[in-house]
Image (tube, rainbow, N blue to C red):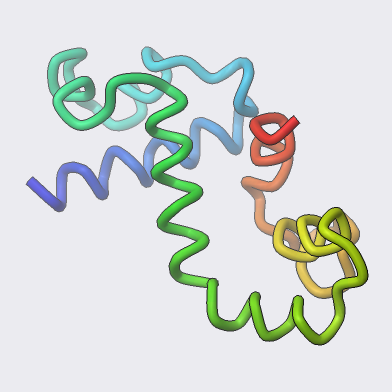
Length: 108
């Protein structure tokens, strides 16, 4: 069960990278994860729930390093958010998390 959930989340992340948050659909996620509608809804009730889970898991993995970096370098909450999303320099570049544009859509 946990592996199937992880596979769905991995496929969903690729969908959000490709389509952005707004244009991505549960159907896109279903197709990318190669699961039925029931199989997807068994784990997630909505696109928002899928995206929030992706955010929660990615933030949990990076939390300690990010908090240390932010505490040392952030000057405001916005600056902190930009550093969390884009990295230490807080600016979009080729090394940033490819999910960053979808994260900004979701948060705005």
